[in-house]
Length: 256
Image 1 (cartoon, rainbow, N blue to C red):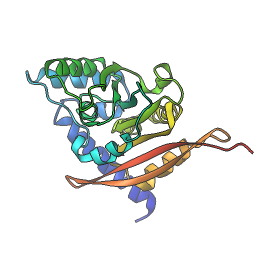
Image 2: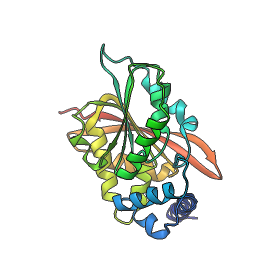
Image 3: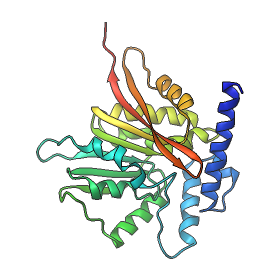
């Protein structure tokens, strides 16, 4: 089988996996898969999910915090300056418990921002945390939920101001959308601009390294301005699907 045929087969399998996962939580069909880059799609998804039960349940894309804590927590070991917080962004948080878990388990003081384009998801998380307060390991840590378009991170963060960005399925959703590929590229560029030089972007994905590494290396290259170092580690297998962690670290290009 050719490399192209392998990539095509994997792409079809990944899309089918995403469809099955989402349909367990919503009656939305293929239309949703094609429009996962749209705010209205996620508003409908979270509104329908919450209306089906009187009990709140987190929706975890791929897997939960325990599966990836060993990838995330070691990056939060550098002590911030006095009276400062490490800035962590859970990008495209939805109703995942990932951000609150980072806030809860970090021994160092962190400001965890759980951001999503859907105000419905943000409201549900705010209500859930208010009803069941999350106690941080470090009493100086802070947790907040914000409606945010992650193609416009510069409106919320200054350059080189964020220590860690966690992307669990957000870029995957954009890349699988009919018109989301350009947005995925823009989100990646925005991440590199707001990350500190010591910071990292973690992309958790089921996309194979032969495809994602090429995309990342191509999209992070800005001649004469910025590049990035990209490494990949396997997270593990779940229900027959392999997942990966792509760590992207900003790197300034030396002028000659």
